[in-house]
Amino acid sequence: MSNNSEPSTQSAPVPHGSDQLRVGRLTKAHGLKGAIKVELYTDAPERRFVPGAVFTLQVPTSSPWHGKTLELIELKWYNLQPVAFFKNVSDRSAAEGLIKAILWIDHDLAAASDEEDAWYDHQLVGLAVMRDGIRVGTVSQVDHLPSQDLIHVATDAGEVLVPFVKAIVPTVDIAAGTLIVTPPDGLFEELPEDDAESAPDVVDVEPEVEPGPASTD
Image (cartoon, rainbow, N blue to C red; front, side):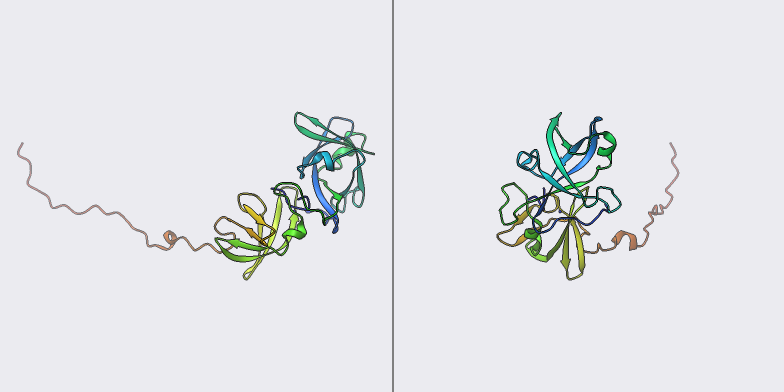
């Protein structure tokens, strides 16, 4: 499931504004000429990753790439893995300095997404979070981390962080203003203590048997 941005390191804050979409993450240097493998966060790379496309970078503030952009030269596929070539990234050392960078592009948020299971952050924030037909909270924020996206849910008991994956968030209904969750036990509530831990110990005792007459066989 993807959410967005392209429709959420302890790294720098997401650099996007109201017109930015997250479309990928750089994962590993490929070869010696600056190519970098890309984890795509879009179902339409042929539209997002075109020669000349300019990406805003989400990187740690300590990175020399902080505040800079990347211009795509070409996106190629090697063994079904997308590999990108960028302007001014000409060797493996430069490529390795960009590993884990998240790529954002300019986009008109007024335009509806034509990708399956993809939403913009502004569409998710404010949705009622439903569990078993009962409202348990409201989406207040979306975080985009290298490993996965997290939804912040404001509840009466405080904030709950929910991994934005299909197994836990199976349904998002923008039109209805709802997001359905099927969380594991303990995510939204305190688990009760195990009754077995507080139960008294039970010791099996063999019943006493009255001795019978000795065998005469």
